[in-house]
Amino acid sequence: MLKVAATPTTPALVLRPWCAEDVAALVEVYRDAELRRWTNSRMESEDDGLRWVQDQEQGWAAGSRFAFAVLERALDAAPLRLVGNVVLKEVASGKPSAEVGYWTAAQARGRGVAQRALNTLTAWAFDAFQANGLECLELLHQVDNLASCRVAEKNGYQFDRLLPSAPPSYPLDGHVHVRRQLPDAFPSAPANAHFSA
Ligand SMILES: CC(C)(COP(=O)(O)OP(=O)(O)OC[C@H]1O[C@@H](n2cnc3c(N)ncnc32)[C@H](O)[C@@H]1OP(=O)(O)O)[C@@H](O)C(=O)NCCC(=O)NCCS
Image 1: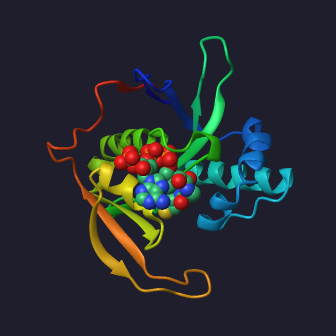
Image 2: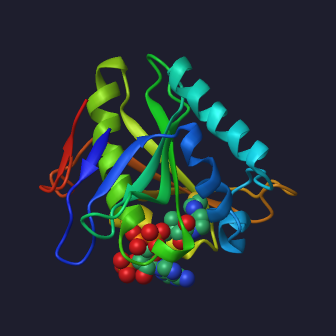
């Protein structure tokens, strides 16, 4: 589990592996057209949600894909609620690069959830996998996904190259952003983030 402390204006975040209890909230979040537009997971029913969660669990078990549900507690006594997803994928021992991805639930957008969650995932990824040969992280988005481009830049993922379109799945070109190690300008984790077992 990874924790990100509250800021003066936003609640704390908890990042933890997806589990079956998340399915109903996951399916609800996926009703959003914007999320459907930019992701390609089928999410019409609780069965789809359960299959998706099981895929994430298999990724953790295989050591190749690490998806975290991003949760926040709006008020002190309130239950944690699902606000996003961050994932480290394409991980293999000795492989120098891996990929990150993310989404934020519609009602939680525009207040730094993706930026803070990705920052924490990035720090965790280098911390956990540098010894296995991880040197850089890649982030891919379609050219017209300006919010995603901004999240990349805010986290020190610099634009690296254009990715040609591949219709029908990818009708427009993409951006590949790369973050190599942890330059001083982007410290490994914000002062308000910490990891716990
Ligand atoms: C992209 C996404 C994850 C951003 O999540 P978020 O929690 O709102 O992100 P943040 O609040 O950390 O930052 C968003 C930034 O994008 C900017 N932004 C939002 N919409 C924008 C737009 N249409 N054009 C330009 N910038 C935009 C915001 O102003 C903010 O930048 P700022 O902090 O400098 O003001 C969210 O919009 C989303 O889930 N989209 C659908 C799924 C998706 O696209 N996933 C990524 C696939 S590559």
